[in-house]
Amino acid sequence: MIESRYYGEFGGAFIPEILVATFDQLVQEFKTAKNDPGFWDEYVRIMSTYSCRPTPLTFAENLTNYFKGPRIYIKREDLNHTGAHKANNVIGQGLLVKRMGKTRVIAETGAGQHGVATATMAAKFGFRCTIYMGEVDMARQRPNVFWMERLGAEVVPVKEGTRILKDAINEAFRDWATNMDNTHYVLGTACGPHPFPEMVSFFQSIIGKEARKQILETEGRLPTRVYACVGGGSNALGIFSGFFDDPVELVGAEAGGKGLDTGLHASRLASKDGFRGVAQGYKTYFLQNQDGQMKKTHSVAAGLDYVGVSPILASLREQGRVRFEAATDREVMDAFSLTLRKEGLVPALESTHAFAQAFKEISGLSGKDIILINQSGRGDKDIFTIADAFEDPAWRQFIIEKAEEYRA
Image (tube, rainbow, N blue to C red):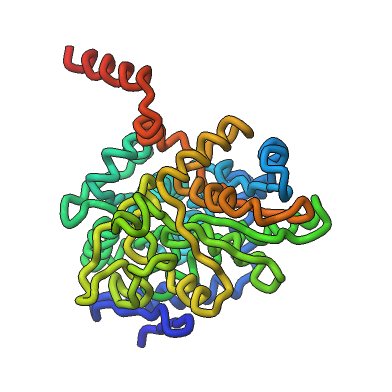
């Protein structure tokens, strides 16, 4: 019988009968690997030679001086191979795929970073790869679509529903149900049915392990607060996990979109629009109405534009262990500009939600405090969205000229 893991009242494994045997195999393989020190050692070895682990901790001296408040440190997951924390998860799951003897991987992606990471892992380990991506996200994340295809992945546009991340997840599950003998679904965040929330969090915990050690080596003390953006929740759980047992405040920044009062956002835990429900194989808070119908979401960041959230984070919110806030698109673009100009860093728009929330709260802290921000990815993938948001005339002219060249 399928094992169902709950975090308080959240989680579980609400799956069709046809997938039970596949999940049983995955649960057993993950349990065996998790209890095998050799597996973690192999994982760390690959991440340290193929990716960029440990990723550095950067002291943001210019931002610290600008705000005249706490010392600001940034965990640089953007320096991971493929440009985001996503590599941590996909390499770990790739090792499990090898243990299970499967030859094909599938994945969903919103911002495209998970898709690129999965395609990269598949190229390294020799798996066939299919990526599902909503048409809306494909249009605003075209650079990542280009790289997925060059890496050898088949990128399937999802034209159903709202054509964003939740719809891509639905299509990936449909594929898995018909190809489970040779296929593994590399779910990209700490959501979905058990064991995915636990498994993804396990691989992402490498962020928190490193960050805690690094800040103690650098400052000799723990941070006052740790900030991370929250879409599904994998990068947040990754860095938060290093400080769960410490007197450190943990703050998750969701997508406030056009504002929580507009309905055009993707905030499940910081707004009043999130309700408990069961969808896509698990129980958590979803943006839904009283009848259980999922609402449309909005965010300037494609990777945060998801209707649900990790059941682990939902439980931590109920416990009061993690505080959740929302940063609007405007606040995010302002924080992006400030970080770019002051530190020469280009955070992904997803990650910039954490910067924006930290900057909003920084006046309430003193020079004796330390804050740590997880830069979960880099922003070069967002060049089209960023250029549009800044209404850059030179960029628009470049696009027009390029289009005219292709037409000619």
